[in-house]
Amino acid sequence: MLSESPIGIYDSGVGGLSVLRAIRDALPQESLLYVADSAHVPYGEKTPQFVAQRAATLADYFVSCRAKAMVVACNTATAAAIAQLRQRHPGLVIIGVEPAIKPAAHLTQSGVVGVFATTGTLASAKFAALVRREAPEVRILLQPCPEWVRLVEQGVLHGPQAEAAVRGPVAQLREAGADVLVLGCTHFPFLREAIEAAAGPGVPLLETGAPVARRLRHQLQERGLLSAGGPGALRLQTSGAAGALAAQASRLLGQALAADALAERWR
Image (cartoon, one colour):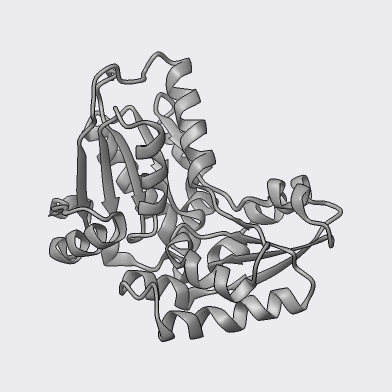
């Protein structure tokens, strides 16, 4: 493993591109390999066992690519598999994501925090432990929003359909007293404009991309693995349709991008 080795990042689909965007901003010199496991999206409706099996397969793939780090840019996969991944590849820097409960607990004035996430994340033992540890005195309201994942995968980020999809869940949490909202799925930052409009002015909307990028930078620096070159390359791959990923990523990241398909053994 060398400092010039790539960083592997994956999600069930394109949601993890919100985390990739933050990593590129923080570490522009690093080469990034993004895998969208689009043949199996959404993870939030799969069993934890299935999600963990896909995580193990993709971790093995990144290791075969001589990656120096792996970012599990998916809350559902982090909850289902992060501990097993670290046991499977103890020499690999592995960073997961989790909903921003701790900063939300510090920000709330009402003592009520709303969390938007997938069913898989909200039902996990890892999420329950996070809430007990970081916000024992705060009321946490949970709102599963699987439709939001589908909207982002379809590229519906603005307009009447997106506005209608976010209006109800946001209103429900705001009416229940939530004065801080947490985006507990990496797909959801791409709907930020619609969510902010529905929430109203002055409501903090917390996501995880920037904290993940900072944690990744720290761990690479500790191991002497930060790249000294740059700018880093970006490669996109998918277990689904490469053309669809290229179009989605180009739209979400605001630049023309290509993608290719994973080899059959990794799908």
